[in-house]
Length: 225
Image (cartoon, rainbow, N blue to C red):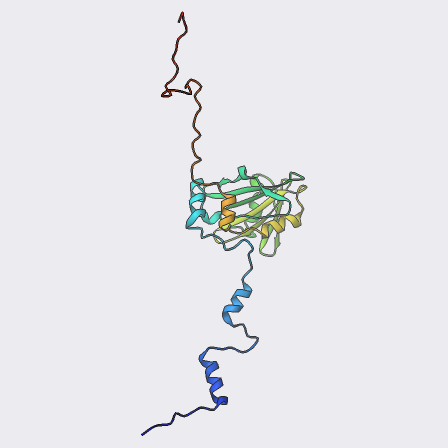
């Protein structure tokens, strides 16, 4: 006996297909889309994993903890490559220079924390014995002392600081540079940290090697010795 297939009406079938495909209401972006919209966009690309890859090898070769390597940016400022180095035991520091005014922006990252109680006790710019004033500015501390000012951003287990001379760099520029501080991506790592590969050796030119024969040194002695 032949059984006839039962055809569901279109009005009943359409909702079932939508449910099976996991469709969502129009205008509802869903959890994944919401998470993507909340994440800040980065033109430089994703930050490098601090524990692996080129960032880790270059930082460790300098004696810097990879997770303490940060980079920043400010209009008119360029990195002074020779300033990149270790801070304290395994912290990181680098300086950016304004090409027109020669003003300096110093980025320093070191282990520790900063609170309302400890902020006044920590000198600005590593100048001990100077009076320090602290002002809360969002999630950061704006600090002044010894002719310098600084923005300090507490992170998990370390503090990111961007400082400059008070008369050389306006507060809004300093604040923007501090908020722009971030973990470097692969391209920024390449520009920020020196390579661990040794430079190729340059052959030494010897003036006593003749341009002919087997290249043995010319030990010829003139008449009379």
